Length: 212
Image 1 (spheres, rainbow, N blue to C red):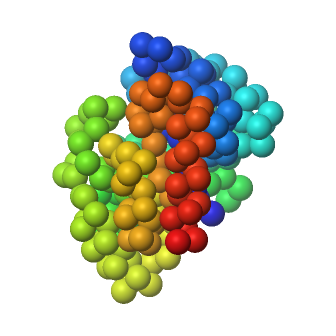
Image 2: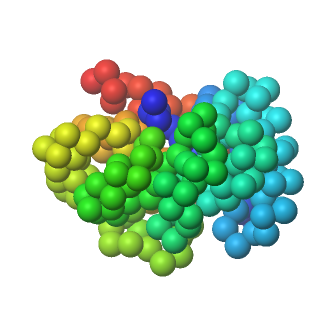
């Protein structure tokens, strides 16, 4: 189940990709997505190997963004596919049934298509504008999540949905009430003065929102 916090790696002036992975892990996050946009597959695989070692040490899952072959070569938990990446159906043929495949969606129609192609979870966004992503789709806001999740229930589509895109800790309680399974974050953690403590606070907020 893709619930709780999913950390998306991000290189900043302060932290490398691997340092960002370790920060999230130290804060208690157990789902990491290695996202290295514009990096060569060889570089992603090299960094992914080190990230996988860290994740294994902490008992965490590692997902590779975009690169299906890297995911397979490393034996990562799964892959996350954007709208312009390999189709989930082809990725499934490449990876087999033992890997988790996620897909990016912005609309209910996206989710219905991804569901038909056999994804295991949905990354739905963006919630609001974010600088970490180019070519941003229309922002959804709370109303967008509420409406899309309602359409999913009506269509009997039951996939874990992870909210992503410019989310802050203050947004979590209302977002969780829309029926999403989890929250994906990057900048809200890495821009904090104490990112490990911020990760812990975010996880605590998600858990209290699940039970609240």
